[in-house]
Image 1 (cartoon, rainbow, N blue to C red):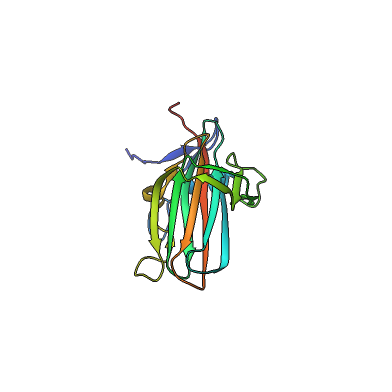
Image 2: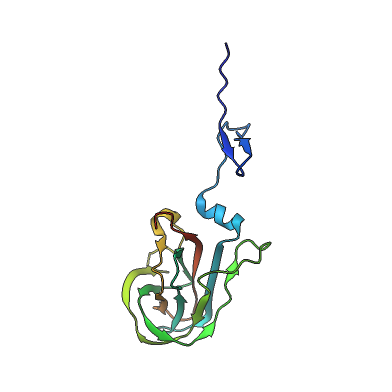
Length: 190
């Protein structure tokens, strides 16, 4: 009697498929959940840049999360051509600014982000609580933020909260960019 082991997975309520194995490496081919959310049209990005920064120049980006159970699984992004400090604050008191376009990472789907309120250069009354600070640039530190493994840098943003990203130039004549990359998911434990 021959026993054949077959790994199967559901692709709908009524259909199952055999899992595929790569013929060259004999490995099971999978994608992680964040990558799946790109395919599903629920993964977004937004950012802002300044291409001519002097020492002590600042760029600020504000993300506003809605009061829903669809949470943003968010990764801070930032880059610079010289030394900068990038900070993330939670619970800021800030208003106004200029709207930033939120991009769906699946360009074939017109789905919109739940976290749609993203502004650059808001008027900041209070920073809030600093939860991240990164030094990057030519001081011997890495050149960007957000390149680590997603699991070690992802934050699930608190609903109904304003977040500020601030990039402060430490060197002169540089370019700087800040942003966020996130997918949205309704927590299954709620």
